[in-house]
Length: 155
Image (cartoon, rainbow, N blue to C red; front, side, top):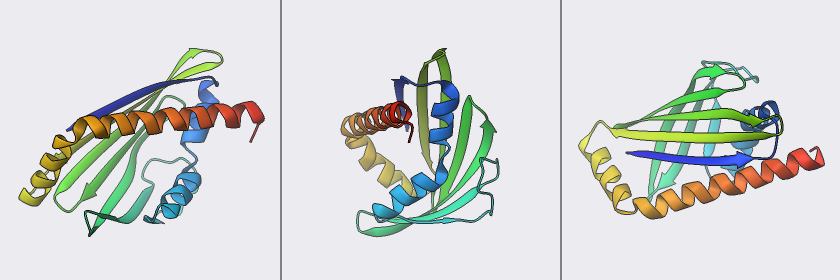
């Protein structure tokens, strides 16, 4: 199962990369939404091999996901691999400079099941796929507008 979203942002590629690579900010955002997040590696920078453990509830059950930044090529690419009980995921975040002040941010997320319960979960996600795709794109659009505001106001 694969989801892709793309958004053009009125900010230079280096600025967009820095904002997306602000992992501490994402960790805090996830915790505010009830996700337990623990960074396993001590790196505070953007370094391949950085790992996180996360726990959140989905359909009433706690889900544990281990995430690792598998690749980092500033300012053009971040690739994350996620592993949970019965499921693997890969998220690729690409940055493309459209001009000196405009950047295209593309996110490609793929999920693959390795067990029957995970296949059933993915199948149920497929049933609501169009709604999930719309939400995924909407969240990226909101994030892009927030990045433009932060860039414009220097925060």
